[in-house]
Length: 385
Image 1 (tube, rainbow, N blue to C red):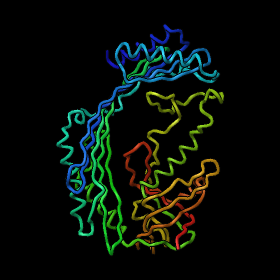
Image 2 (cartoon, helix red, strand yellow):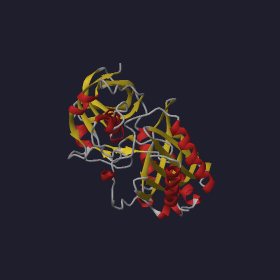
Image 3 (cartoon, rainbow, N blue to C red):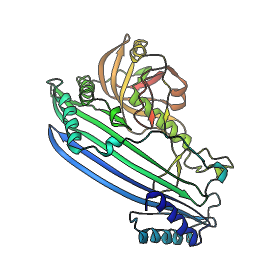
Image 4 (cartoon, helix red, strand yellow):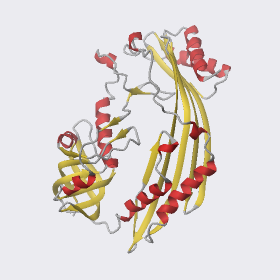
């Protein structure tokens, strides 16, 4: 059986066992991961996974079960186990499948799959990984070490079926390449990183550019010191700006209010699901649209302030919006990056920060599910010396 047939078979088995409603997810993936450190191979790993998950409803009770045994007997056992679990769980009047009218009848091809990744030879992936690390190590004599370079890729497909008559399947792929060099000056070490990621192999940046950017980011951190304590503008680079969206998405998801049905609202469909879990609200393709300003123009607009390149810790309260995190970056003086800074804390309120965005950059890169361009916040508290 293919994945779609397995999903349908699971639904039929659970309905035959007495379930009121059922949905099933069957997924398979083939992943490759290689790594080098100091020009030597550290790992080559290939893994193939196949799993099936089943959600069943008995009256107002629900259960979810999953298995890696996709034989006919394994699927039958999964259906029996899920139904047994559901009979013993507490009732939940808000649980259930969506209204049939909410189901999609057709959907566009989002072009998420690249056959080139399925045929990729591990030796080629190792070549790219070596080239990326070499570009970083050879960039400057101060780069004396490396935490390594890694290439990873995956291809797979997911099938879904429900007792409402819906069946769908899609394929997807993903690849990434990253480098983490270490630089030393006057006995002090600094590290930074860079990565590229894309659904398609051809969409990745070249190994040389990934290694070169990782080296540039690492070298500019040498000689870091603490910044002066004050209120000032704070500029978030694209990587750190995306974390603001993550905090916002976490608050909007409202995990304590787990479904539209409980609130008497119409579902929006903004959810994700793994094989062994129930659907939950989560963002995908969530980004800040690019603005008209180059990163250089944004920095030039700041007389004195902070350019953030890394954030540390998890000091964000999603209820009050209070925000306090450790930061690393570069101090801005008279519109120019003056010197690297570390061991500082930036603080504010997430609502105020989003309201006080003064400038939005034109440097958006869609590498992950959440993304943002450079953002300038009018004023935050920077605690340093």
